[in-house]
Length: 114
Image (cartoon, rainbow, N blue to C red; front, side):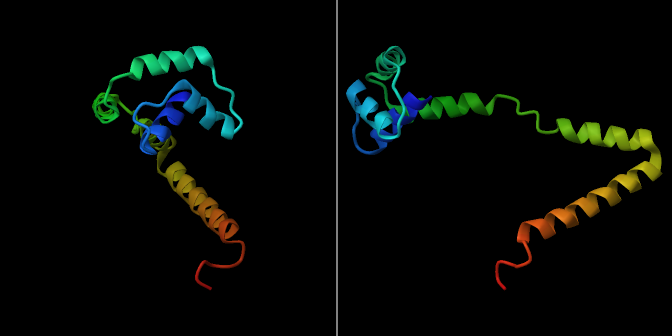
């Protein structure tokens, strides 16, 4: 991933075909040692390809991957239903107290616009 990131940075900087030496220079500048095998594989895979098209193709593939964002909500509602109305009220009250405590900790006694 670090090799790809360096390749993309060089491409954005105007180098349409970064060499292994260019990528190593970028990685060395931030204290990362380049892996020659992975670097040569990356360069051979990207040689002659348009990065914009590759990114667009990857984005369309990524859009079809399920993210599973609704997993936590089901578990929370199931627990509240099993606990009854009293359990749900207690849980809501505890959350409210916790939120108030977190808010007071975050501002450390002063507001952004005070």
